[in-house]
Image (tube, rainbow, N blue to C red; front, side, top):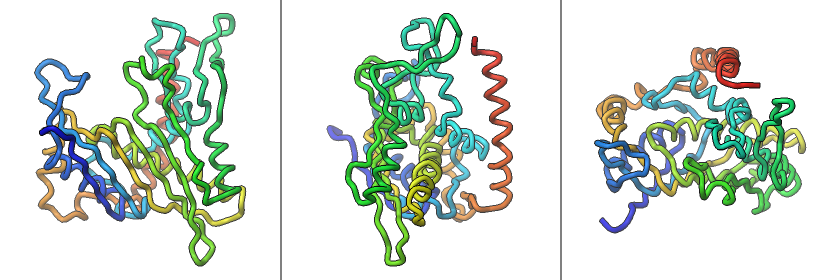
Length: 299
């Protein structure tokens, strides 16, 4: 094969598009190596993909097969709101092995990075400039909902071209359409450079849906007084892949269960039991992060 396959998937809900995309990738993807393979790992299965979720908040929203739990989803949503921004490394310290970036930091503080003060031990914002892209996009959409300029990016070429593990998420583009009843619908285009289809994609999609709801739509509504709902989300990944080491787990947790009714493979996020687990996870997650900080961070 000389070309990387291009896959297009459309579905109403998140769980449905997730399942369809993985099965299509397994059937149509190309086998190819990655720079993260360990000796003996089989090749990954890879494709370029475009997924459209027409009603991102609709049920069934959660697929049981994704390798994680409800608490993991909550933790990722909190991470996208800045929970772990302090886990970023001092870029000028070659011995600092903490994270290279967080998506929230790149969206809210683009152009800067964190650096520790040797005098105080506190984290300081530094860098050539600072742009709060979240605030700017909300204002732009509130002022001109049909603008084509409401975009946020993560890529910083002065850092990321030499980074071992640079950002996978590249950009978020927003536009609003209004229905006959005056309701605004926030449409979103998401572009990933690289997207781990099995190990990360579902949490990525779920997290960005919640980010769009809480950090973008709700804030636009607060500025304008308009009712703002989520319209379709289009998800593009240049490399959408299952690592070779994960193929057996994918088969066991999803592919081998495909003969079961779809309803048995999914959860409704609106289910009171799921909501209870999701909401009660917040304090546990904060405690876990605090305990990690006390053990690993030298403030």
